[in-house]
Each structure stands twice: as C-alpha cells, then as structure tokens.
Amino acid sequence: MADFDGSILTVTHHPEKSAAVVTLNAPPFNVVTIATREHLASLFDGFDKDPAVRVIILQSAGEHFSSGGDIPGFLAASPEYLSELHRNVAAPERCSKPVIARLTGFTFGVGLELALACDFRIASDTTLLALPEMRLGMIPGSGGTQRVARLAGLGRAKDMIMRARRIAAAEAWQWGLLTEVLSPPQLDERVWNLVDELLAFSPLAQKYAKRALNESLQGPLQSGLEFEGALYGFLRTSADFQEGVAAFKAKRAPRFQGK
Image 1: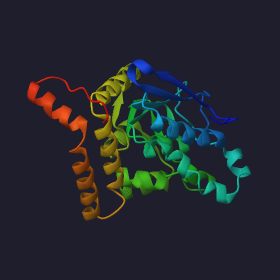
Image 2: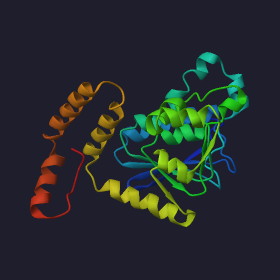
Image 3: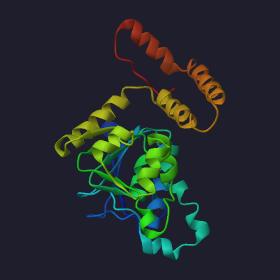
Image 4: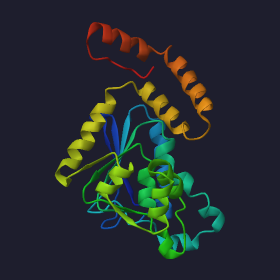
C-alpha cells in the first residue's frame, strides 16, 4: 500500500468477526486532510478485494467524529483536483460490502459526507450533523447536496444546507439521515451486534442487494426493475441460494460461503 503521509486513518482487523475497523484518529476534532481522502479510497478498494473482510466499521477516536475538512489544504489544491474529491468520499458507497458508520459529537462537513456514503449510520444522542460550508462562501463538495436531498428530501436538504443548520441526532433520525440513535454506553454494543447480524447473511446476496439499492436512484423505475431482475436471476443460480433453501427446509441456520 502507498504511503499516505498526512492521513489520519488507522486500521485494525478483527478476524474473529471478519471485520475491519477504520478510525479517524486525530482527536479531538479528527480534521480530514487531503491525504486522508486518498487513503480512504485505497483502503476501501483493498477491503473490496479481501475475502477475509465481510463488514467495515468507520469510527473516530475521541468525542467527535469529525469537525470537517482541512481548509488550508483545500486552498492549496487546484480547482480541478477539488472537483474530483467526491470520488474518494464515495469509497464506502462503492465498496460491495456493508459499511457501518459509528457517529458521535460533531459530524460536520466532509465528516458527514463520508458518513452519508456508508450503508448504516449508528449514532449516539450526542451527535450533531451539519454541512456548514455556506459560512465560508462555499457549498458541500463531496456529495452532501446530493445525498442529503435523496435521504431526507429536497426541502429538508435546503433547510439544512442553505442555512448551515446544525441538526441534532433525534431530528436527523426523523429525517432518515441516521439509522439508529442510542445513548453513548449502548453505541459499541449495537454496532457489533449489527456486524453479527450482517454476517448471518450470504455475502453474495449482500453484495448484490447493496448494488441494486445504490442503483435505485440512478434512473427510471423500469430500468431499476430490469437491473434488479437480472441480479435476482443470477442469484437463483448461486450455491448460497441453494444452501439457504436447504437450511430453510431443514429448519437450521444456513452456512453461506459467498458462492
């Protein structure tokens, strides 16, 4: 792997859980540098190819998930480079495996955009969400306008982004921006319980479910139905489907192999 000097990411593997944990490790505010973004894309590309990793957790060290990006670093980058930064932040979304964001405290700017690219957002009730770029004479540039509008609706996205509003966890959950909100002592247990829940399913079916769901907002309904149907037909031929049916008939837990 390349040397991403200036990245704030650290990685730990939990082979007993088939999980990798990526940590934003520069407390207290975990400011996301340019190098961090590039490191992120490289890591998730590696996870996608690693059969030992079934689920990825994205978390932070300290009280806050992230206060946002490294503004001086952005000022030093060219406009052309900045226009492509969204591709790095989208790495969790592109990854074919489930990605869980564990959120606490400030989840601002690119920190929120990164969380929105994950499949699940499990948050403590201390979490505050914001895309404050308007205060700098800027707009969110790594997917914020697009993903908030798709998850919460256009009216709420305008209310949040155009006013640079901070959204508390309870309201964000009501909007559909968070999967679950818990008290801080419950957070880690819930995240790892979700890992166990996801591991019980066929990794092949998980991969194609995520792909079909991500594609659902990209085009007209008929195209989505045809795409879903093609994946459904393909999975009909898989060994995991045969195992799932056999386990259902035998009233036992399935033993999926991802084939």
